[in-house]
Image 1 (cartoon, rainbow, N blue to C red):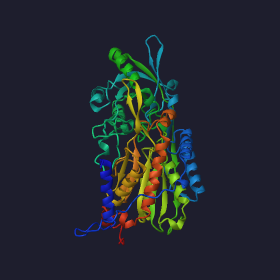
Image 2: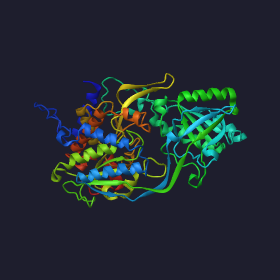
Image 3: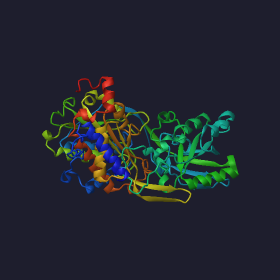
Length: 544
């Protein structure tokens, strides 16, 4: 028995024990009864085809980046809501969140080194740091200043400049490596089908999706402002193909009072090779190097963004009163930049259309679809907004399923060799589960049925918009990948990193999981850590 099957059997045994399935008595001569299957039924005739799902994917990408509250985001939300209504779901909007929206087009940014004879050497800009700044109100619409080498942009790199004032008015040049991580993030697991042994705790997971956690994203901009810098150039340790259009970090807030004309700290990204060129120039010429930066942006104060909730009532449910009957919550966020960020709602739409074809009296519970917003700003909430506004839904929730960044391929980027290579297998699909045996068993068995590889089932809450449901002590499952292209606005590269067959396979798996949950009681689904936590907090009073 291989490791995958052993762990799957263990999960199955845990589920059987939970369901009080009798095992063989020590003195019995008869064979033990078969353990129950927790594999959910799937009627493929009711599920949208891989071709349709791929058409939706291309439509979403064709809208352009769906930044929170932008016209492109609103168009995506309209599509999702309209399709839900066509399927017979009832929709409503949660209270509007308001925030200052910052917007720029990386293709309109430019960077050049001003040579001593009056000429300029143009450098290709890969992207910008979101919310960083605006050069539109500066003379000539550009920032012109000397460039100083600020190393990795860490406190020790800015210390002397802050004390002496030597960085004041200058453009800081910073190098940013990929955030160091390994596949240990998928360990220990309850289940993982990795037939080619591509994942070990020491296998590198060098993906730019994690660079929102880098010091260059979290600390360096503040240090540059403290040092009096006028702008910043960050050289990503990535090939040009991967660096192009990276939107890091989406959690940033607007730097300075740009709504009233302040320039903030205009910050542009370049690729590894350009960074090496700049570093070599600075090492020779030093502070005499001047750069001209152009980053035109706009700030829209008090932009509104609405979360959409869609309800498919179950046997005891009421679409106009979500407090009636038990429910399952299915969630993702709707704002994002790329082909993966965020196509989770397309999976939700496929799920909604599938279960809408099953008669209401044959579905034990209502399904509540949370199309969250507010994920791509540093000012707003995503699913936390939903949980805060719907205690009546949470009180009757049997389990939650959250899906993000679907159908992704794994790529290896080598900036020194200038290669960006498909690894030949899907991106790691981290699968967070609450410590409830039925949740663990249903996810593991349905993964095995669909042969969903490289998707370790591990304890949550972890990262992503599923976290809010774990923190609400609900039985929960959350699927998320972190590909290199997660934040990439370059549509061609991001779409090439998405596999339509893997995308459809994941959706099939989610449908099976949900179908299996519909055969189990709320008590069984929460008979673990979630149930204990609910009982301790008084949430589950009255549950037998």
